Image 1 (tube, rainbow, N blue to C red):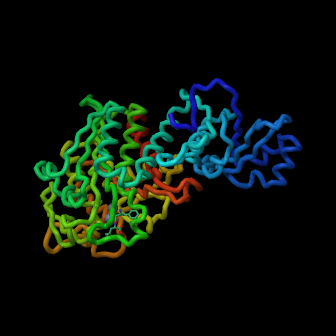
Image 2: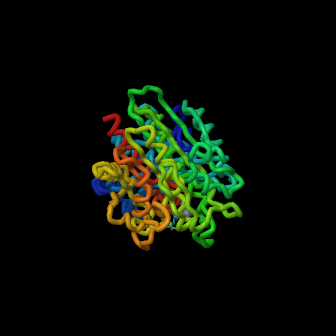
Image 3: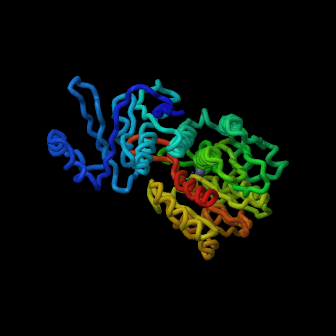
Length: 457
Ligand code: BES
Ligand code: ZN
Ligand code: ZN
């Protein structure tokens, strides 16, 4: 259990009364003159996320009033929630949707990456696990994603990511396997090897499996696990390299999603694949102009060593298709172009099935984890042609970079496989939570909502 929630607490706690901003005036009419005056003088009720602390005659905190946005967006309360005094709280409302938004916002907002810091006392919310178990699971999975991303590359390289995954597998009743270093060559994963071979931490393909009932559909998740992206020989400038510890964010998302799926016991078999590498610079680094023949047989020309994510995903997707999954989803911090297109908090989603992107967009609205359908126009494939190989990892077109990257991935996915690709940012500069800057789960809540409707009805 994460430290801003308790589920088995019997002691005293302060009530938090959430108020929907759209019903604020109505609510205020029913309050005491004192509260009415306070609201008027302090501008309370004007903005979602505001809270007002009420004290009793003994000077003790007796109640918290909290304004929640009209659409019950959990992120609307994140910014202020971690300013609450440490102590125990409970939610005072009969409205489940409202309580659920407060629980999520409480958890998302109070997150703090404490691996290298002293833990801080938190405002702890008492939650009924029976009623709000899913909200707790979603917050926990979000913390998993954030912790993994926030951990610096020196402590979360390919080796450590594999060790972490092995521990995770044990905790979640999953099997764990990995193909490491030159074994990638003998087992025919040359694209993972060529990108990761320059690092002193060997490249690898991590594989976790869950569920044994062959009658259940196979859901395969693939996550980009570039533990640090220097850009390789086409080295990034300092300002663009600064946050590249986050480039294993796709891997973090699929681990978080697996955690959620297992916590909810979705009726699926699960396969999680993470190609884990460091895109490093050394004498053995791959170069511009190199050609690698992928597992699929297609040869790839390396037009740019900074477009490494799609290269390691190529063999991972080919391998994933060999098991004929019912559904294949990849998460990757694949392009800067995705941010240029949609900004920091709207996540582009691609698929070879249009109905999936539409359904995921809807789930994005429901969860306030906004996702937007992007096209994969065949006519743009000409921009990833190579003159000396079957395909080029960098596009000749300076526009639509996230689309040409998506098209590159698509050429490694069998047409008869239902496939979804998510170009996640994996990061938040405060745009979403208004506070905590760092690793962020983007697309996790939306995709899980979609999977729940798909597999649980
Ligand atoms: N990891 C980056 C993409 C990225 C950059 C994601 C910034 C989020 C924020 C990826 O490997 C990369 O460098 N992509 C290049 C591709 C280009 C060289 C074709 C990009 O997007 O600029
Ligand atoms: Zn790169
Ligand atoms: Zn990258």
